[in-house]
Image 1 (cartoon, helix red, strand yellow):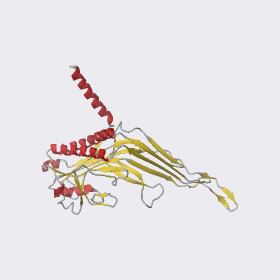
Image 2: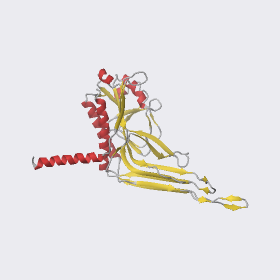
Image 3: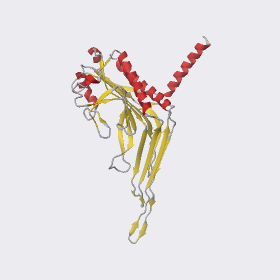
Image 4: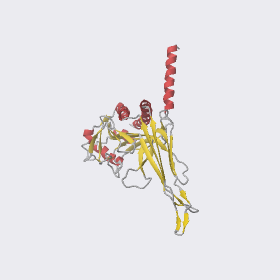
Length: 351
């Protein structure tokens, strides 16, 4: 064995080792049925109904503890705690490049299997998309998920039911469930496969902690591709209660639908994660805590009764987390590609 050949082997092992250490434990899971019917149908066409990649860049949340009478006597003031954390160094160009690269990988894998991609022009003629808006990809929006940049691939076109004044899209489907549209859409496209990809990367994780008689918010950095989680964010409603947060469910999934049987699809593959896939070595470990506790008063007795003077407490802790866009791009792409490739391959085995 020559020294040059030996060095090449060692370098290859080092690269594999670095990549293996950059991601946490990978725990994919799926729900599927009727996949054998796709092979029997001999379909070789697929329509990509959705391809979204979501990147969390900001998070803010509050906790409120209302004051009042204390057990044993006395009064306590109100307490309001708030934490806000922003990701510094990530721009629209970077997330667009990640999204476009993932989309190209997805298309290449489908075409390598012999599948023909149905165009938006053909899909626009279906009854399923009658009255829908046709949207061009390649743009980043923060209207879909609070504190999250949502990105669609450059050159990709898709359909939404409507877009409200804030820029948030209404996707369509019964009670907003797009998947309810796909059996009919598949049939209208000649029993073609309907594929969707939705990837979500979060960097803030909420931590539980003892609050006592106060209000407390505690978060930590945790860059990860999620399976299904909730994004909690301070409400921006004009009329709201103190400490009110919104809760938005977010997912990562790679799904395929085929055919129509009654109200459902003949064949379905829905792939996700049973636990988040950690993206390591990109963000420093940071913990941010905000705690508030209203003042207390035992009261002052007078001939008119007992009077209380209590202090309300409000605290806010803000943190900027710096990130290297190159490291972020490499780590997030590695996680998203691993997830997307696994589930796409698992589905394609049935064809």
